[in-house]
Amino acid sequence: MKKYFDGTVVPENLRIVNAQKSIRTNDIENVGRTARHQTMFEMLGNFSLGDYFKKEALQWAWEFLTSPNWIGFDPERLYVTVYPKDEEAKRIWQDEIGLSSDHIIEMEDNFWDIGAGPSGPDTEIFYDRGQKFNDLSDDDPENYPGGENERYLEIWNLVFSEFNHKSDDTYEPLPNKNIDTGMGLERIVSVIQDAPTNFETDLFMPIIRDIQQISDRVKYGDNQDLDVSFRVIADHIRALAFAIADGALPSNEGRGYVLRRLLRRAVMHGQKLGINQSFLYRLVGTVGKIMSSYYPEVLQQQTFVEKVIKTEEQRFYETINEGMAILDQLLAKEKSEQSQMIQGADIFKLYDTYGFPVELTEEIASEAGFEVDHAGFEKEMQAQRERARNARNNEQSMKLQSSLLTEVNVASEYVGYTTLETESALVLIIQNEEFIDNISSGQAEVIFSQTPFLCRTGWTGCRYRRYYRSMWRSLCSCH
Image (cartoon, rainbow, N blue to C red; front, side, top):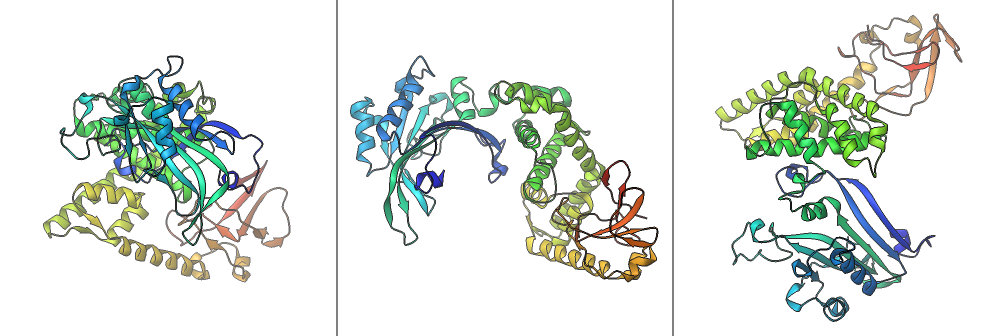
């Protein structure tokens, strides 16, 4: 939206409304432990690009929240926060909308600014869920709309984007005044359904009930610690199902690594519920049914999504038990030695041999009161990269089957430590002990400029092949 807000590009439509699927993992450790954190959520928004501004935005927001034709909230349960210098917003709320002054709170934080580019004051709307949700005493300084409490829930933020934050830390007016709003669907649903948390709504409870049935050992609501695991799994499977349906796949880099981490984290929480077999894929259909009226793609691609998740689960289950046993031993060892640090070499072994994402090891260690040696881990990773690089340069250690390969002097970079997929140039083809320019049938040995393929047993005796039969297939043949 920045290019529209700053006037660089003129949009076709000056008014936009959307519901946006979002995945964010920066607060992943809070998922399941708080009432409102999710890795996947839907952000509802309306935007004005130089069209309507503050007055209309506030009036329409109030109408949407309070009119019986829409959500129909009791106006007495709504509070707003405003930027102290934004006299116009205060006047509109009080004089034109009719909100009493004790429901309008001035807060210095009500100025949206990321340090550069479009910025401006904002107003947040809070819903008073009532004393039954209050986790603070009446005289607690955080017991107010905008404070850190469970009673007053922020449901909508309306940003009046009218300034450009320049590199010299000054502000200048934008060519047009804009509106940028955001409302979390899960939050608004929890209020409408009077649910204690986002997870006790119809967006999550069908998934949680399925997890409970698969576990057949514990019930949701019986144990606070295990409830966290129910919520984590329900949250993570939603993110996985939608991301995979949208084309993302688990891998060792970028968004693929995010998915792999989510899946393996969910598997670990499944073990806490007594689930010791692949199960996440069985939840995909439930996720799809819940969201099908607006997002049919999960059900449309259910078979594919299930296959991807099940395959990834099975790979992790091959090593998870042994890896967890080793991690438990490491924690016990460090504790006996009165150490509070898991060493980098041990973290690397869990990552390289047992597929434990570093963040997952860190999370488990943190729950047990330990820190992890990130610097030591990076040192081990670099050493492994060097070993792989040296092995590729050693012709004898490769024990290559084709004698012609000893005559080859082309570079082939191994990128498997950071990705399982790469765009690469085909630089050499060998068939029947001859260099050839192209191939239309049969079997050949090929060399690419980059490859993510690595032998299961290491570099010794590894050979890369691509086979042409009825079509090209990407394979790695190791002997």
